[in-house]
Image 1 (cartoon, one colour):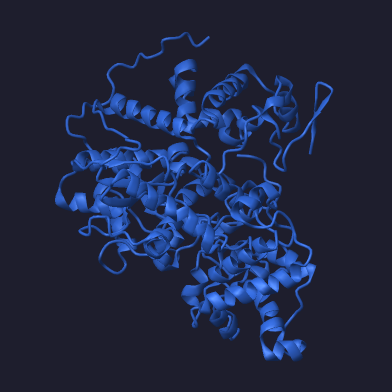
Image 2 (image 1 turned 135 degrees about the vertical axis):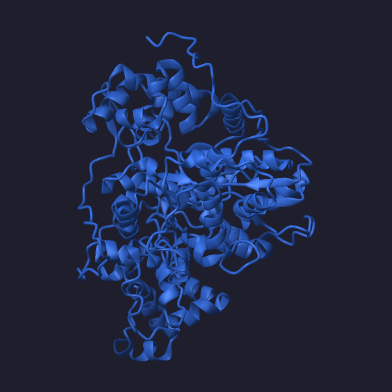
Length: 512
Length: 110
């Protein structure tokens, strides 16, 4: 872990609402996208001359397109129910990180230009002109919202701050003020096919390496096919699964499940990314363009089913929007949900009894589960309501003997964000990420102390990377975070599996 | 922030990554490490050199697993893990070591 240049929050046994401290995070703002990252997304390269006029115009356009946005901006009654619900407020004490405070940054400008009272009596209704200071505040604080939607669970009007943040980012993009992290990545998806910028050759090499590793370990030739025409299943997974740890251990697990289930499947070099950062920046056009790759890949490969790997917001886009963004998917087999989550698939196989499971393989762990916000609050899994909570836990319990949940107010639909979602998983926001992780870290620490929890499992690439990075700041081990399918992978006994590798000696070269 | 290496000024991006990978010379790694108060040992150079070779072939940094496997093969199994790599590069092998090696930063959910 690197040295911290900010104060790490103290973890409390009982969560408490901290006192408000004005402006603690006013200095936080991510790098601005250079023209080369703006233009491929069809946004102006830099702040346009008549930016105020253009921003108001963009706001008007979004209000016309999204009725929900106008309802959210109109309906807040300042009841205060949301004020202590945001992990960024709890970690930073900055009142502009209270959901209502964040919404008001946009709401005051909306009132000034789009409501009668705000046009004629701005001071009476808290309406304000769109000035450079307001724009700077937007840039700072709309990049301190991970669009996790926890606040909306508690809002009696159901106001969704995520949607307001998305709209604010879209307005800023349209006047040339984009965020480097998100926009560079979206441009990479268009150019190379995934967030990482992993070219086809490197992907093929990585998958070959995995096949070797699994065969070395188990003696079974599990395949990780790429661009296999005529396969039944297209697996779309975050590119972090090819690259990072513990993500890749999850990918190994998906392959083992497919292998044992005896289905034919493939990855695609064109749709080598499940993530869709178009959602984070609120850009329908970019979200659609990113989604279309999946449709094209499915058609080109002639698959019958689409399954998504462990990725939180990708599952929101897939479950909630894919059909309207890139459908209709009438060319797929109607017997299966379109799309399906890998956990639904694995849970189905466990129930059918196709997987030979040795739970004791995970006996060195006491596992807890972190509900990822987009899965928990913006989607479902399987045929039953609440399946997005039950299925991951069912799978974990089917492969682990020791499972403990964290406190009820921190899981299921009340889950706390990892602190790095919504396009904030970037090093230039490290202070925000560490502070925003505080509520989750508190809940985790409690189950560590009370129940001896050793590991936390997650089903989102962002959560996994974020925890790997922030756990050490709180004195916990980065290896604590595991993929759910890593647990599955540990416990599956493949047909014909030989135990461990007998022959340890593989150093051909002298290490000198 | 440009950096001075062997009397030449080299451009870097906001996060300190070399703007033009072709301008890399070993001195780049030394200067960057000195800024991080890190002294580069042969163990660090093994990683940096491997990263550069891999990048040349695949146009991207190697996955963590690819890197740990290669290190394990070359330096022994006890070193083929990310703990060892984080020991050498506390900001993370993917990011800090890539920066020293002149490679672009890995982006995405990593």
